Each structure stands twice: as structure tokens, then as C-alpha cells.
Length: 267
Image (tube, rainbow, N blue to C red):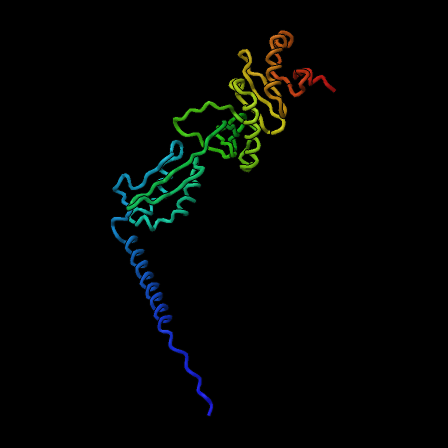
């Protein structure tokens, strides 16, 4: 007669281990669910509109606080753990003057908002829509080419940057802003006498400088700004004697200074 095969022994230890892990998993899931309900419903985690410290804004100087607070208007009376932080950050970035923002939960019932504001570098003169003549509105622009409304009761000592428009993209304006910054960095202290910079052509800059109490238009081109300006200032007393009424000068040739009158006479 054929021999019966021996049955393998029942693996009690293996099944007990599997059962233990299943029990741990289920109990952990139930505990997590209860904890989630607890932090969403318990009053101690609620963002209260009656608590002045419930929502703290840091780093705000020029951005409108009312607009920033409005982002969280629907969160009062709810648990801070129900606040979608990424979505709130996205809405904060849409507020004027806000360059970056972070939103943090502070146990048990507070929110902390840190704002990094944009830093303006120049004024921008833009024509009024539908306006006539020389009507213009003045805005500010930061290093990224973003246009900013001037805040109330704030004073800035910046030159006016022309050659920027509403129709340009931020990257297009950024190229012109960086050309202006390169010029101002090269001029150093001499840049304090520059009141206006035309960057319509970023590689062919023109400035308005106060020289001996007179506003002069100086074409500086695409480089050697400090050397060209210093050379002009050195020779200007003599130039003024010969061309007292001339207010526009071309300094783009390093070995000569050309007046507007001389340019008009060239073929």
C-alpha cells in the first residue's frame, strides 16, 4: 500500500504574528481616525476671531493688511488643522507687494504668517489709459520687473525708469530694470545726480543728470558708464562756454563728446 504523505504542521506562530500585526494596524487606524476627529472638533484648536493673537502677521510694511487678513476670513471658528496651508499661501502670493509667504500652525489654536515683501528699485512713469498730452501715473517696480502701486505715506528716493509699459511681461521689464541697476552700480556715488533713466533699449541707455544745476540728457550706451560720465563732467565747464544752450550730449564714443547740434549736422 502506498504511504500517506505526512501533513505539514500548522504554523501557529506565523498566524499569530500575522493576526497581531493586523490587530495593531486596525487599532492604529481607529486611533488615528479618533485623533483626527479630535483635533478637528475640540474647541481648544479653534481659530477664534475674539483672540487678537489668533492670527499673527510678520514682515508686513507696505502690503495691505486688510487684504492679507481677508485670505483667512473663512477659517475663523474652525480648527487650525482644517486650514489648507498651501492654498492660503497661494492666495497670499496674489496680494500686491507680497513676494513670498509662509503659513504655520502654532499649537493649540494660532496661525503665524510670515510675509516677504517686494523691494522697489525705481519709479516708473506710465501714460494714463485714455489720457492725453503728458498725463502719466507713477508706479514702483522691483528687481523682478513687477509693477507696484506706491503705498500711502511712504517715501522713496529712486530715479524714474522709463521705457517700461503695462503691455510688457515681467521678464521683459526685468531686463530693463537690470540694465538700470548695472548702470547705477557702475556709477556709484555719481548716480545720486541721476533723476531719470531711459531703458527702452536696454543696450543703449540714456539718463537725465543734474550737472551744475541743469538737467542734461546724456546718452551713455551699453557700458563704461562711470568713465563716460566722469569724462563729461571733467570737460563740461569748457563745453558749456561753447554750447551754453545745448542740453543733450552723446557720450557713447569714449574718445569724444557729441552735442545734439553736432549730431543734427552729420550726414
